[in-house]
Length: 149
Image (cartoon, rainbow, N blue to C red; front, side, top):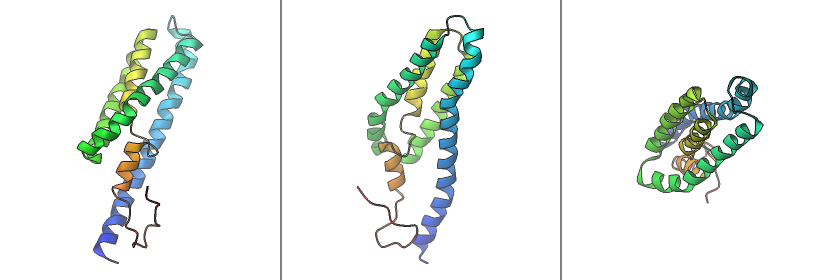
């Protein structure tokens, strides 16, 4: 096995668990609003199904707005810096959700969370760019070949 193949294996062993953990956290983050809704509508005045639904929708608006610019930024920065930015801002804005007391604050935090999380999915252009930066060469036997776009 060549040194390049050993380096690729090492990168995959380190990268794939991190990607898996990020996917789990993203799923829990999205399901978190549905779970919090059970007590938010009872404990906080002004929160009802419409507020929660609009907050979920405004999250995806923020996600949509920064997805393409994120692809352009990752070209100027490195994928490592961009993914670090995503994780730090994602954590900060997710923590700010605990301080929400009004519907406007909920909308603002969900929008900012969408902006922070944009580019984190491996199906997104940014995530795909980070993954293909480590993609194997066509002559490599391990790991299996990926189609190039």
